[in-house]
Length: 77
Image (cartoon, rainbow, N blue to C red; front, side, top):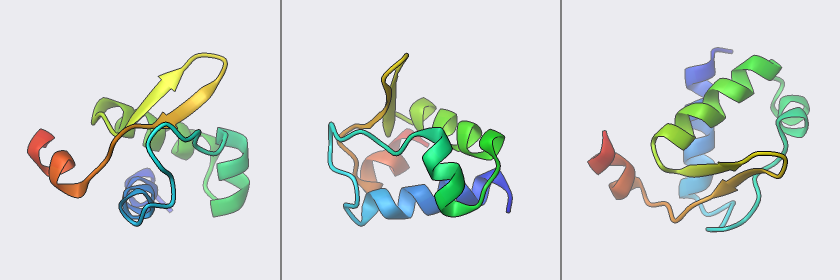
């Protein structure tokens, strides 16, 4: 699978409320194993979500969900 499809999958899961604002996202390694994507695909998808303001990265701690709605993401695009 390509990174953009992982990005889309993660956005769908965020939209569904699987992760709440402030909640830690799965580690890159755990997500890699769970969704059968490469390490680099997961890193790219997380980086894209950070650039969109959907996630925040905390070095040494991981990625965290920010307040997210599909409308807010559409406005940023």
